[in-house]
Length: 546
Image 1 (tube, rainbow, N blue to C red):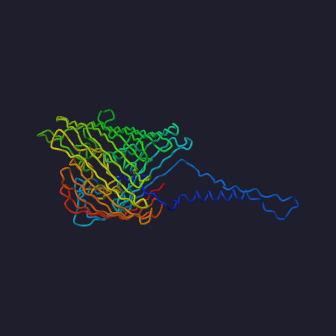
Image 2: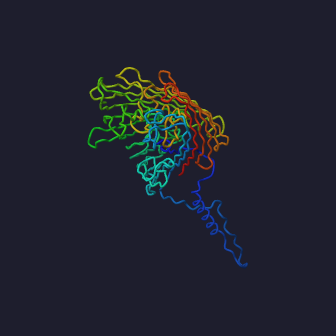
Image 3: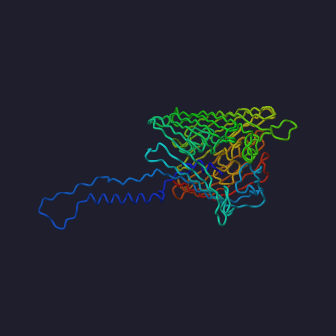
């Protein structure tokens, strides 16, 4: 469910200074055996007795012996294993949504704050298999990605996603995450082009999610606050390079979000165009235009889709009521929506300087068309900025401060002045990823239970004014990190959503293997849909394997 955690799979986890993975040992063993064999062949033969002929010295051995080449089958695997034990005072009031719970805390998902304590253990494995035929020299590849997840002891002998962890297991619960072909034409060293066709992860930035790190996705373009989920279509990623790196990057993509009738004009299309330039050292400027054409009438899935749907309400987006006065039945609604985003960044990944900063602003416009009712204009805006400082050695020794602002809807019935995100069109269609909170905003590393006071950056149409931050320190650089963080958020009228304080201790005992303890306490405000203090503690194990 928290698809970002896997979806970004992220070369995405944590760098390490330690041991190679055990699966590399056989290759090393074969290489060592080959070296010994070559040394034996180069050594002079032993003689049983001296001969009268003049002594001839043995040839000198080369300084570096050749190594046996590693076999390349063209098949690669990337997997993320997650196990998470949670204790909290959150309680589910809807047994039909117990397998997967997401959305606004206290909203229509049935998850709220209770008097008692609950506990659960969840597990997920997401695997990506990529085959690049060696005969094509890496110019083309096929990728398939799958996911299995469940809660310990939930159900067995069933069919469906997010279940299958009970005694007996035997569940049909395999979920498709990727199914795509990637073509990389040979255009020279300066121009790199990658064409992706099929089911893929679609972000709201210029960067290709298949080869990008977390900072390139979470801190560029729309920062996944508008779009961040799987979609089927075609993408073209281009990079113009010089001796210093990428000078210009671009992305053009078109995706079918919904196809109701194959030969009917009732589809939802998303087209995205992005460009990023790097005119100065470690500095990036980007411009982005995304357009969504919705002719579905809001009729897709069990919750519907679009700004008037139950899906939007479930995930904390604005659910607009466009019924004419006196009507009880909601009309069919279509839309033309546009997002224009500008972003800038200096040293966004903290690799070239101790300090990094990012900023972005988005204007959301368009029109909603309701049958038998007046059209509604969309006029929303969002702004975000973040500053980070690495003040000591180690990946986790970072202090950060981030601000978020989004516009609020007003009383004009013919204008919606909030923002619309992908959460109105898909389950976990967008996620605010860089805030660092667990209950105030959505936890990025959740598995099947992801609920928060503010789930969508629109604040349900009420707008958001938020300030979040954290300070971390590596007790052992690259090995053990301790961090404290938190945040405060209000709606557009100044009423508080709530405040959170959290703590985490994370260690990496082996390469790309993380074990951590997280804890958070959130005090709700007047704008929240819950009225009791919420707390949660997590013990997590994550292992990125490739």
